[in-house]
Image 1 (tube, rainbow, N blue to C red):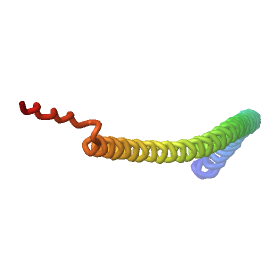
Image 2: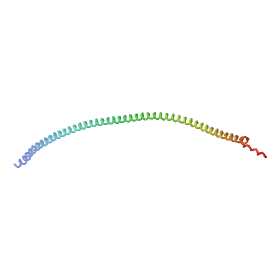
Image 3: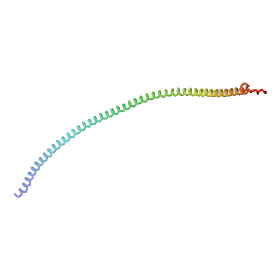
Image 4: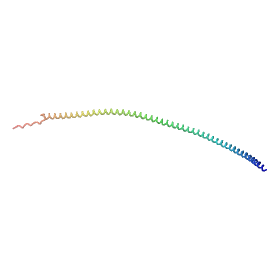
Length: 178
């Protein structure tokens, strides 16, 4: 019996061990399978979440890109409008300055004509002034000549009167001697 006990006890223990081992293995495998299923479910959920986030990010990026392109288009349009406005302002100012230039050229031409007319008139007045001065000088010379002629004539008349017997006082004859 002792010998049987030595053989049967290990066999029974081995059967119990195998039974417990197989049962434990089944539980472990079931747990692993359950964990694998849970992990797969988590991974699938995470992948779905990541896919949803990627899709949301793609949509957001597309929206942001669309907004950016729209903003760039708006900026470009605004810049073009500002450029056209400034260009039109420059054209308007150029036209205004050209009109002013033409007006000032006409004024300058009118002033040149007026200056030419005034110079001509000045030369005419200067000639008239010179002629008047010459006439005045000639008149003064004639006057001086006339005065000299008058003085000469008066001197001649005075000399003839002195020499004339008519202008002398008659001499009183001496009283007759008685």
